[in-house]
Image (cartoon, rainbow, N blue to C red; front, side, top):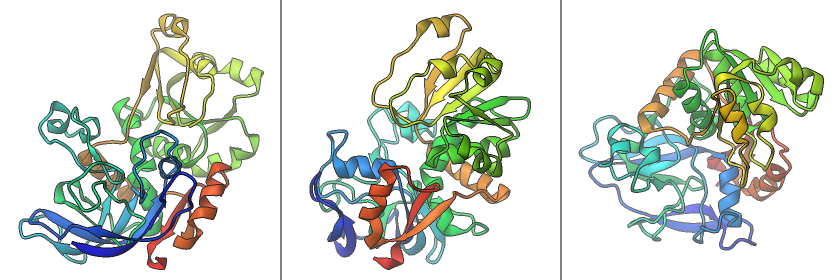
Length: 346
């Protein structure tokens, strides 16, 4: 075992603070990464606060990890010391179920091992995430990061990026499609960038007129203000696909009305509760769907696509000791559009 510096929360009421953790030694198929940057996801805050009732303390958050390979196991083939590498939301899955065999480990029928707060045989009994100096994981869950990108701005691609890219690809978003992105936050701003880069006619759907300029600078062709009844009326039945990134409870009805016959709205924002108007599904053969990150193969595809198109997240850099203040701002959506921690500050 190896002791390293990290930041952890010890209960739902405590702030994150410096805390030493133990990592396993590098095994034959393992890669060790010295972490340079770690993105801050709203999921981190949920686990720190035990909002979902499943947190095991101490919690060391962080699943948007970018750094340099510092050690590799004897059987590792794809990575060498010095390579830029990344880890997203998963570090292990069963590898045997149909989902894993199909390259969709995020839907592992036996449950994937999350990068943090999942049961593990590693020291501590639960996985520790990227708010730490280094991390060790199996080679099959390590990703290659294009060197052509600004690395600090790539960290959120490992969660916000793949969460939006995966459904856009699955529902064949591209030229000739009219696509709505609901909500311009950490997820939504990536949805706009990807939908535009994939060639779709991209419409930012928001309650805030002030976000229109930002949306267009990110690649939106139009901005639709959802609180404007006349504007919404004109768009009824016009959208092939809508990506809903809103993370709080809200009515789906206004957005489902915007879909064409056979249109789909995919929810990635994970509101706690929601209701379904079955009539909207029946009268229009519409689909309400959901999506969860992406498998390792698709995540690598997304990173390569970002390298080709020069796509990164819009980020605000913070020091490790700024994390508790950043969480307070996160609650208020006071960030454009993702915090990233400079882990050299730990």
